[in-house]
Image (cartoon, rainbow, N blue to C red):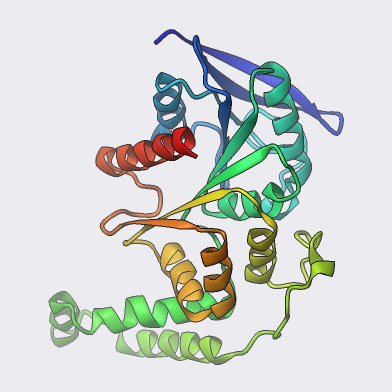
Length: 290
């Protein structure tokens, strides 16, 4: 298929943002906006976003990816995922202006980009779907529990651990101190906050814990959702532990008919060709079928 891949720029609060737009010769009416997570730019780890965009475009799906203010080629001061709402709004506006045939879009985000997508999606009726990979729900208590459950406990069953311990190559005192800190943090209780209708616009209210703000976004979003998680990733495990321990999260996901797909051996960024291709195929299939 003939695909036009072009450099783009658009304005967000008087600052220029730069990106890439892939438009097939015969495009479908649903596009994908790839949202960048963490301190990286529109290419992505191991060129994941480039390859994903080109794969989707080959299947007729228009794709846009861009650098947030302060990252990559874009102007402005660097900011965290909790403060990129204006960037996302400007990007969606530009996507639709450049591709007037679009009826709606799907936002695709990895890690804290998935969190940002949940903050934004319910506020824009043009967003009809979300593909969220290893969503970032980090809290001090949550990561402490994840380490205890998925790192320290599992190490007790590893032969290499006992070899190091018996061979004197293991710093037991340091590990005990670390274990104590994680145990103490995991037992700390957070504020028991209830998400209400009045908090619909609270995505940037940092006084509310991150998981609560994300749950709020989930409850108010009316589109389709696909969540892809990795088996070899503490961020994914912290998210899954949260969902499995929260009736509110489970009820919200059931109501929204959220679909899960787990790649057991994959790491956080799906860095092998096989994992990357699985993610791309899952994304393309859902975008075209929703």
